[in-house]
Length: 138
Image 1 (cartoon, rainbow, N blue to C red):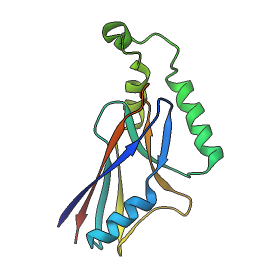
Image 2: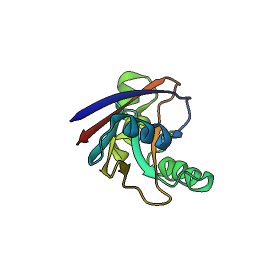
Image 3: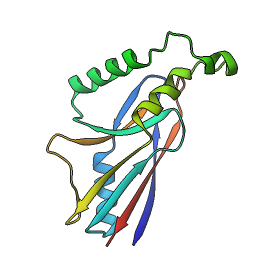
Image 4: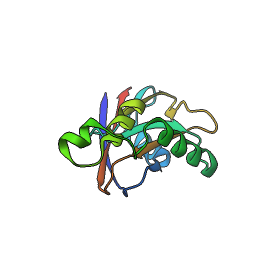
């Protein structure tokens, strides 16, 4: 069986890191699937999905690490070509990836005690972000 759902999240022009865990768990419960896999995916090339302990200190550490990996204030050929100033956001998205997959066992995501599923939006303007949750199993 395959169940698909869509979430929408409003983001800003910063490096937003949004905890999706409770909403994704609710969709898993709604699906009725007990064993399988759960995929969380965001369409687009300036956002990512990953997992982290959603605690203020480590969230800020992640923000700063991302800034060191792909700083906003350096030259990007994408910006030179398109003039939209978000070359850094495309690079950040490519480094982290647009999806996260987790096993489902006995109707629960197999996450560590301090592990949450998060959406990261890197773009230089706010938007409505889609997040697709697809659950496959029985």
